[in-house]
Length: 150
Length: 150
Ligand SMILES: [Mg+2]
Ligand SMILES: [Mg+2]
Image (cartoon, rainbow over all chains, first blue to last red):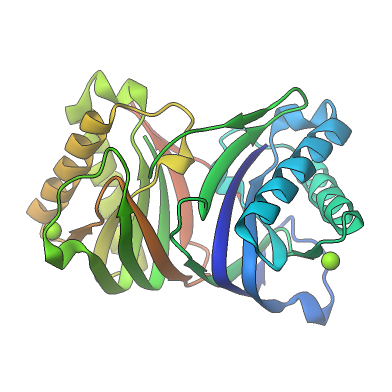
């Protein structure tokens, strides 16, 4: 799993049209506005399918850690296939994203999950402090904290 | 090289603080606002160092192609290390990004290059049409057009 964590002033999104793998959504998920959100752009990868439970657990711990450090109010899980060139099946992705949502909620966080498989417009404002953009590669074994400045 | 192309209503950025690899910039590059911009988030990778010239040429052709299709007015090259876990040296990255800028300008495009190695705040509004988010892996040999829906 590759994740890109953006500490944002706000995230807005609006669903536009379905792709062939769109999840069914209620009307209240068609758009959203979240302030002071830690946006977790997430690409679920092929190798995550081997031990989904541990990958989810590692992702939750990492996200919770960053969430505490930056002082965000909401976590927004945003499916983002563009972070990887080795994607899981859509079914595995939906399962893992949903389990991340459930797990983070169990920790007491306010969690929003942006719909999977839809074309969406979005607006985001990244705060720009040193922890406001972080990327991680998460596997069943470990979390790779890539050190990079851009 | 990994690139993420976002057709945006606007991109705004503001430099906040330097990292240890920050490029020197003039005052007029400290912030920018670009409307109807194709934002090219770019991670230059280790293997790009072997044949920089061809990688740059392939990147330019690909960006120019997407630029024509979406009808953007400006290309904004945005250094974005978070798209790869196998980065080039900062010097190679700066050289490649600059040569992309020069090459695209030679094709007659209006090009802006966002400063390398600075912490920046940014705001972006992604249009949400099917071509408004695309990612590519570009090498000296070829361009991989990853087909993905999220
Ligand atoms: Mg929820
Ligand atoms: Mg220029």
